[in-house]
Amino acid sequence: MDEDRARDRLRAERTEVQLLLKDTRGARQQNQASGSETGDIADPAQPLTEEMTDDAIAASLRARLAALDGALKRLDDGTYGRSIRSGQAIPAERLDADPAVELTIEEARAQP
Image (cartoon, rainbow, N blue to C red; front, side, top):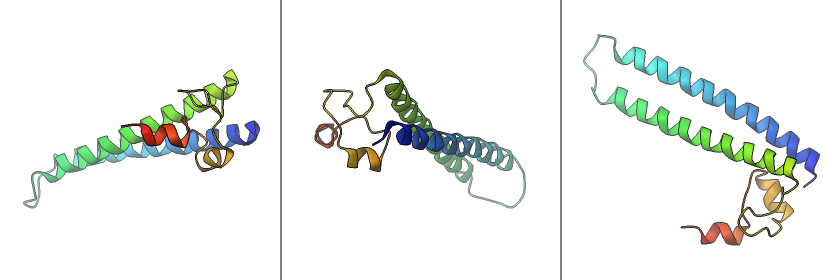
């Protein structure tokens, strides 16, 4: 993949992930506020379930943001497109599918 194209895609996705993370924080705050309201009898576990779901989504988004930042750093360092483990070239098709990918397909499959 062309490095300029990769950088553009990574930056665009980074912006999108940051917005999603902001929305998730807002949803969590809204869920917390609505959980403290009195009203109809409701399932007392529902606010906790919603909070755990929001936390899981936020953790996933933060992990993706870290992967995107790592890929941008590799572009700056001149190591983009190479496995962080072995240094082997990552096929262009794999980078097209996910420009933040860090491992070859074989290495990814071998991970526990």
